[in-house]
Image (cartoon, rainbow, N blue to C red; front, top):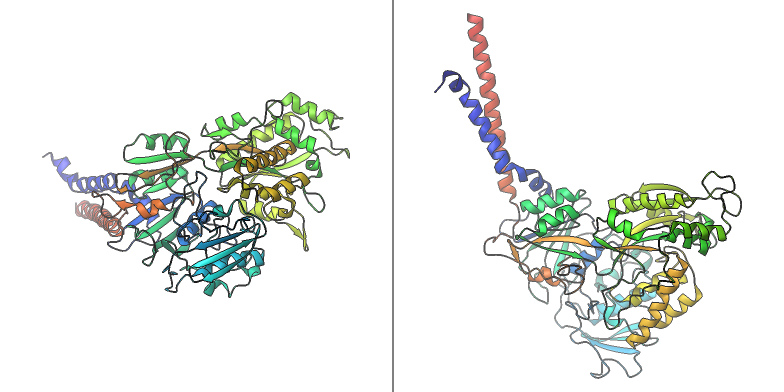
Length: 622
């Protein structure tokens, strides 16, 4: 060996070892450590890790509203009925669907008698009975708990006939009864919580008591939610012992962790990353839209409001809609992973009948800047001083505040495009990106005890209900200060909303829901911008039993998770024979790697310093 090479062989070989370790093992170290910031799975347990870009806004089902919250509740609680848009249903407490023929529904359609499963237990060991079911419904109805009052509309009260029988008494026939996805809660816990506190201040602290297949044990905000298998669950026993929903702020990082096996599935992949994962045989994928839509809400409130009053003018709102190029939003903001939107009831979700309404060519508020200018001219909004900004009826320059949420790069891109088009037609725009908490505060603004929303226009994305007749009531007059974000009122719309819930003939009901969509579209109070596709991927090398929905996939299977509809995925999943540990990263392995690397680096540093010291001594002696 060359003398010079031999002189440096020791440290360089050690350094090479460190490099090899970093390449071979350390690439996934950051992701593994990030995931292991959550509670580490116990040895021998099957742990499923799912990455998401959102998280529960509240574990209390009477306060929370995010999609992530609904996913957690679908695992924590049971529903009396668990109907889906395609007519199938998931696990539910009802033993049999009531019908007029089997005597479960009275001839006048007002009384439903439902048998529930016997021997169902709460996660604290107490029995779940019909008394709990009756309590849940009556608690919502009598307490006016607005998260679910749209679902219980038309129900007068619920009675416990015996431990396994409930009687639901309605004021009139209820067409959406089996779509009433209400988490059944334990009476012995919630009877001590006043309804006012339940929907405002009550904190559901883990471990939370439900009867579903999994129980929430930990929630560390901006980090993870941990659920464990319920050993007393009445239904199919899951092979999964623990579920960790891991929160990410960066979609690219989440995708890389998925590829490295740090997590087992992910929701919200970027298009570029999704395309690469889709071509990898180790993963199943879905680009899906079930009831998801992306919208712009305009403050139309009459009376106390801090919004720009010009938005109460129907013609002004219609001009704003004519200045929105939805196809451009799809192409640029969503990178093609969406479809142009029209109404709050999505196309392609329901059949026989399809509840979606589509405007005719004459009705469509198609993108046309010149027509938008003409609409504003005809409505009396002129640019009298030629500065490029029109004036309102009082002579003041028009200025609209337009907001996009900080956690949605797509809506931020949309906001920039929309602001540019509105400026082109002479409307002044102040575009800002705000966190959704701030937007929420402005929406719920009060002056003393008086509701006075402080916003003009903002963008957001939401999921409608499985039953379209439960989505359209969001915009009734009585829902102003609750679900009615544009604070809009229309007498015909209110009347149709009250009637459609009792119409048992599907075609007749669809015609009423079509008309409601038509009214909203013509009034331009809540322009639906796009129908985005959620992109998810899941590891099929390490897991078997993923159960995609049979609908909702835009170019393949429907979603396998994150819809609150398909609990079956979590019940059916099990590690493949090649991956008995469920694909979870090992904390012990990661720690061992870190220790080895630290020791090696320490040896290299010691050796180098020692050599330099000896060399210095030799030179000094010389």
